[in-house]
Amino acid sequence: MSKQEIPSFEEARHIILNSVTKLGAERVELLEALGRVLAEDVVAPWNLPRFDNSAMDGYAVRAEDCVAGRALPVIDSVSAGGRAAKAVTPGTAIKIMTGAPVPNGCDSVVPIEHVKAIERRITATESVVLGQHIRLAGEDVREGETILAAGRLVRPYEINMLASCGREHVEVVRRPRVAIVVTGDELIELGQTPGPEQIVDSNAYSLYAAIKELGAVPVMIGIARDNLASHREKLKEGLKADVLITSAGVSVGEYDLVREVLAEMGVKIVFWRVKVKPGKSMAFGMKEGKPVFALPGNPVSSMLTFAEFAAPALLKLMGHREMVRPLFPAVLQSDLRKKKGQTALVRVKLECIQGRYTAWSAGKQDTGLVRTMMEANAVAVLPADRESFAAGEEVQVHLLGGAL
Image (cartoon, rainbow, N blue to C red; front, side):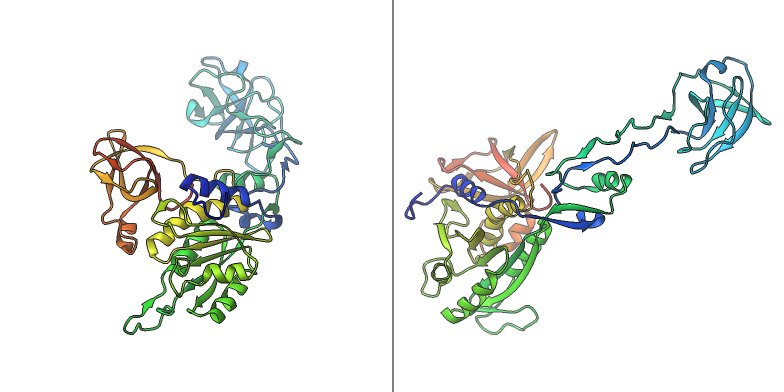
């Protein structure tokens, strides 16, 4: 694609994802692996369960002894963490707790609620199936089996398996440090009182939260003022991170200096502008393998372009296999219009009614109206080749925020 060509929404995302590669690995403590992607195969060091054990509180027996009306003497008991001193011999039973190793000679466990107990003798009140309520060694995992492959996302379930295998540490894909630079003389820091024509910087905080929500490491660089010296200082610092994200200063105004300074610092601008609304003026570049996203300054444009373009790239850097939010159909509840030739990202309220998703506009779609962003729980992605969409027709939507 030449510098003059403006990519479509889909082309821009494709270019970005083809430009970034997964980061290297690091060794972390087990609980630090939550939400991360494994960078190693994990092999089971032993069987799981490690030994045959009872799945119920009850009695260890031989199934053939549990015939109607036959009473079995209870000759021993065993609890979890212990071991029976005796074996189950023909015509006997041993009291057993959940998780306890089954005694020698036992081939079935009768739940405590399925026996009639008188003194130290029990009689089964229901039929007993051979092997019932016994968890066999290795029936879940076999020693030497690859139980988790590199590339797998570590959830609480994987944490359980890793702990069961005695893993205190695990290799995971490194989390990128993502620098955030916002620009503009009108901005003041959070905590200061705005004067006339001043606004409190909010984009840096929403970007910080969005980056952290993904599992990456946000780094606040600060505000670049509307002069070359300040831009050079902040962007130079930002380029020390794995990823640089800027907000504002990327349009065509006199004080929009981001692209100029990035080019001066050796960032190759891959594209500037995208056929999408909001977010048309965003730019994407690379420097020595590091992605650089120059996002618009309007709050909604900043948040949506991050979600649609930067977030998938960060997920790929962290080794995730699923990087793009899945689209699914929803029925429009009101007419929508857009400009032909560009994809529209419309904030909508999504509900499920009688098994079908329905979508209402979340309100005015002006890119400075953050309230509409808060009211929305999804985005309708309206294709570039159409101008109007009627109430009652299906459009493609994806959810906003949270995990994929």
